[in-house]
Image (cartoon, rainbow, N blue to C red; front, side, top):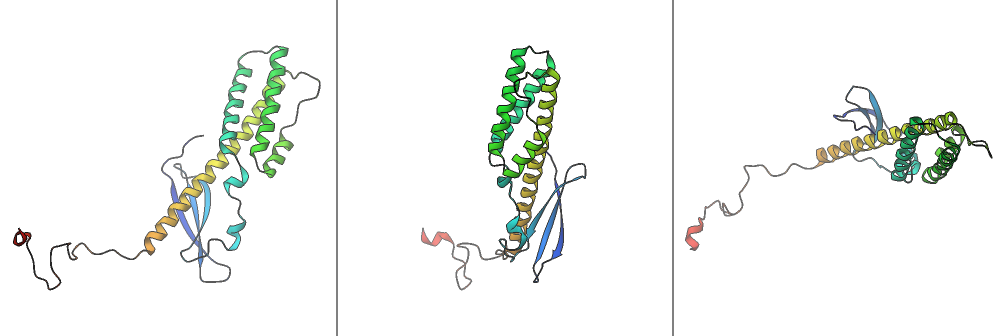
Length: 204
């Protein structure tokens, strides 16, 4: 996945449903100025577990094993390049078909049920008891690679939005902290309670 740099967050405030608290909507903007995601952050003092936020699905709910999905995606992409590079014989086509079907089964185990259903609807199995042609294999592999790239893009956007939301929450916490002692305050060991200065030499 490509790494986006120099993100920009923009905050907008919308009133809550039943009180004076507000919700901050963070719009994540990429380096080219295009919005890449949004995140909703509760205002200071608001209950983060209340409202509709408790019903939003987290990234872990959609992709239970992101590392596994990325490994399979990298393997399938490499396999597609091999299929494109040279014609395959019957044994090779049968082997690629087996890898393709096994990869789909492994992917389904790492995905949430809604993503499993989507994958099953879009990626149709090969015809039983027949060896697919090179063109059929390329189309099937390219389709799966494209679906996974879209999934990776969604994961990246979700992670990016979560990072920006955490940054906004940290800034809100910092603004809510009391101010520390000023630089001109009493120095440690410099003055006594009555304002008299005691040099260290009298104890030597």
